[in-house]
Image 1 (cartoon, rainbow, N blue to C red):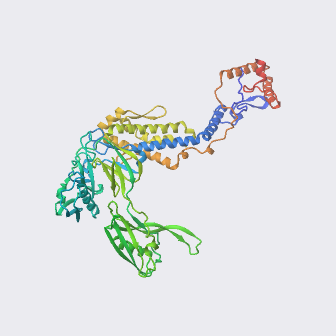
Image 2 (image 1 turned 135 degrees about the vertical axis):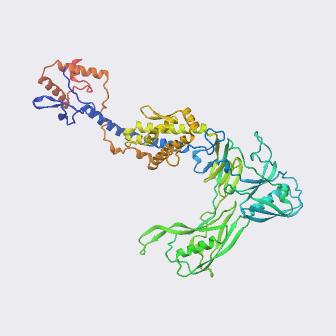
Image 3 (image 1 turned 60 degrees about the horizontal axis):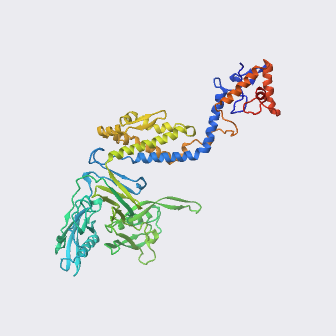
Length: 632
């Protein structure tokens, strides 16, 4: 039987068959211009694959980039979310883990201090009173002494005829809050208990009815205030009792939080100045007034004289103002800060923004409700004003109290550091959110297993995308993301994490993971999270994902220009069907049955060339082929 290579379906040409001298057929590599050992069919198939990949890149590029972006974000989120308990070992009964929704981690941080660092804010609670009942205290003025942080202040409380217990408690709270000491007082009430046997303020809170609470901010919780009588027996009648430090770990519970405002001090800022340039301020003495305290009245107030001499530089002016304003009151701080200024050339043709120095004046260590104001600023003849000239006549940041609703109780703090569960849960506020956000305290074992499973699933999703679309992506991406896993293969296997299948996906055996936590918790932690000397698996995967996201997921794809163009009208070199194979056999039978030798070859080319003059060709995809019609 004679075998002849017919035109390849992908090119429509007589690949692999040329005519040599004397009309003989040449099928050697030199005749086709191909390297030895590479068949024309393989070449055409490879060219088709490349062109087809280009078509897929054009068609699927955007959706693939979107899929990669989603997969990278999920890997980054799940790998970053895996957390280790702050106390005890993962399977111990005293071990806890705080869990916060990823969407709110930019606005709020939740933590669990160990037992030695529980930060109880409520330091003293009075006995409970019926708020509407008339007080048993005699009318008059009562004097008390409040102490905190090595300082003391005298408080004066007036009790009028007919005042109720609620009136007296509020009067004491107002006097404490009006002092300069960092002690907060509030009147609260507790009327019942929950199914666990204690009221909404937590275990150990004895009072029922209305009572006075003396508290400090969490950042000062290592100290306790004192409140004693100096005239009368008002403090004694309150029967203040110290709160105890919880002994048990944080309760497994969910705390509901809403962040209404962020704590920010009042800040004044100047523009930026060239410290070597001569000041444009007129020489003279400028008087600046300041006041700090609540809206009801200033607690600190005074004035500062700032002297400007002829020829002073801006650097000297700023340094002088920093010294005078920063030392005027404990409620006010001043510092030099980096700033920007506009530089103009001497011809006013060139302009640029350059580095400079500015002055920042801020309210220092404020109590809730306190603000700072600067006023005045005129020189002796009121011909110039230093505050308006330097931009200090308006606040750069007016100031606000931190305010959160935690488990139904509205709390105000400066700074924005809060607690829940009697100091066993810490909450640090950095943003606001109007909706209720849950912070859950869990026994960590199940959470850790689920967290690791989520990270493994995210890794496998990304690897699947990278391997299945390797022809459209930068070379070696799949292996680059696999490297952190491959480098730790032995350690991961002891944790129940092994690669499986041709795709090298990661599989997790939860039972083995729990056994590893029981036998070697620190080894598990070092492998997954690192130990200070080496980076762990999850931080490395998260970093890789974050780097890729920073560059953009579309940067992982090869550019469209990397692919050859493909004629969309050409057929693909796909395997032939049974019917196509039968037609090929019929054609070969017909050729073998004709005249032999040169006549057979001549007929072949005459029939092939007849297509150019309107005739019918011998090829399987040309309907009505003369050869096939005669055969059947």
